[in-house]
Image 1 (tube, rainbow, N blue to C red):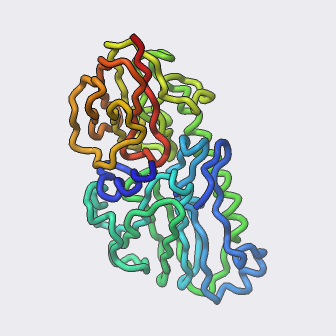
Image 2: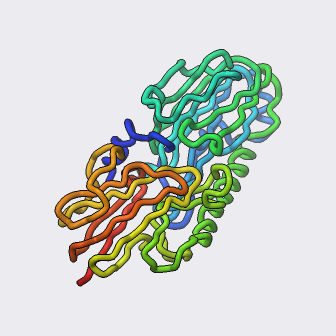
Length: 341
């Protein structure tokens, strides 16, 4: 399943972690030992450059629930300081960028393959576009902030939901908060985002156990701007307790299944693999192929579909068949269709 990570290098066209991502608790970034001091200690050392830590993304429930944000969302540092952005959740987290776009410059399209590569160096001073390139779980990217100002940091795949603010004071100015403060704020934000993702499952708009499934879901479904929370699963019920088996469904031969993308912040595919296959193909999500009839002899791929869009396939062969999302296979977004006579 980890091959989907390499697939993402050239296919994150409409969207987009480390350790952690267990079954019930969010992953937590570890602060450098030098950043755990009291306010008095930090104030006394304010003239010396400091490296701060900011988490990037989070997940829980075996990567099903994802937080699309920076943790903390706002941080104040001094000119000359650096920030290490740690991408969370290991191989199961979403991919992200850490980017700065100067005022007045359009935000680059997430589909531009140039955005997958670093650009502009590792210093953010407000004068130029700076981009980390695509980052995966466990990676750390550090930026230096040499000039006072206020900087909006964003993920090109998940903005406008995934944005943060870095306030840079003059060198030597006392810090308003300690690393411990930011750690507590970040923990609260993670729980809020993951809780919102879990709660969104209750919004499942179709009949439980029916033939229409949600391909991902997020707070507010598709009726409001992109959320900082999302669920990377195929859902066939409105019960969060069903997450471990989400998307596994049994149908009679000849039945048509329909998947609807009910998330505001992620693209998905429905990719059904031929009889006997136990993993998704290592291919780009687009173009679509295979049509809308699955007979077990060849793969069927929906191609990318985003919030509000749907894909249907009729199953004409008895058996047990794997399907999944080419964008989020690394997050275990896959399930099985069992077709009976």
